[in-house]
Length: 238
Image (cartoon, rainbow, N blue to C red; front, side, top):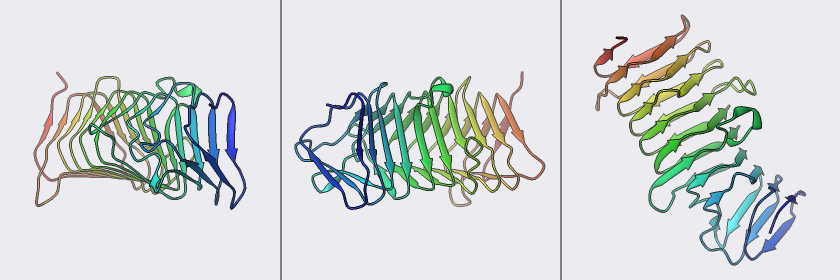
């Protein structure tokens, strides 16, 4: 049981534990490994009081990535470096960490790649900095999806192989230079959607599979940004 901080902090260091009950912070540094030897399903929830921070290290459940079945985050997940792939049991990933941005809870990706195969319900903060965020499923956003700006990360890419619904009160922002978002399904914006960084681009649908952009909220596009919609555009500001 972790109530403070557990750190696998040195290159080559290995920590083996049976079951992880995390109410504090778990940190794995580059070249280090944390093995969960009696927890075959790995970590399926990160509670509101907990953090998992991978600074390039690995957390394993047997032969598998211990985050492979992660289905919910109320606390903090920070990923640096290697690719992490998540496919929750039940096919839904819910993030409610970071509903108060000041406390820095939520999902943060730094110079890394996160692949999520699931429907994503975001009630918190998802922040990609110089990273790739790939979601194979529909996304409902009620709070913040941010590419860049909080840590000045550039060249992030968001790919959603499904529909994106940005709900009332939700914010999606491509903030720093050369950020890219590709939404393969229908983009419905009821909240606030900002394509604001220099050289940023938003693509909705593809030539082979057109999809609509439906804007009922606040959609702002800077002069130096590009939006390409392979489908119909509906705007209703009534």
